[in-house]
Length: 254
Image (tube, rainbow, N blue to C red; front, side, top):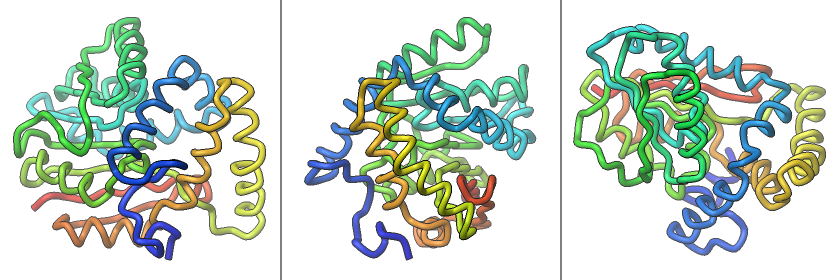
């Protein structure tokens, strides 16, 4: 059982945050500060493997992306890497929208989309209170952002609300490798090296101390699968990639 499920914490709690409102405010401010170096750090700290993970997600849901009648929402899209990976997978396919509640991230997402000539839309929105009607999307995705929600159950319920019947949710999140040797090496890097590199490059040590802390407190893949099922999803599955560093969760709305 994960630390999050044992403690009963319903969502992320950055240091100093006493409730969901304060947690959300901390996350918004923190990601706003690191936005200028966010892409560079993601690629450096992951050794560029983050690009591979996003391409894998896009391939997994390519049938939806290639349907020109489909609508796709990429939650907590940050600077738009998964949103744009979706567009690359299906240049003339589904309508694709990226949303995030950090405006500084969206500035960079829009600039990248414009430079690529990518037909995507970015909107500022809170993942726990989306400005979209019920049953609006065929696919709702989230890469490395779900962990930062102040309430995981509410996040899953909001995704369920905006999905069409038969629609798919796909959440890609960090995990902790299980292998003894690889797991030990990974944890040393993640908890000791990554925060220092992140602080050096971004100038914000708190954000890169928060990252390993938030991952260690996030529900296990099994616990998140159970939460999906609890709130009403079906066909709930997960697959671990790269030795368990990340996990892709998929589920369907009946």
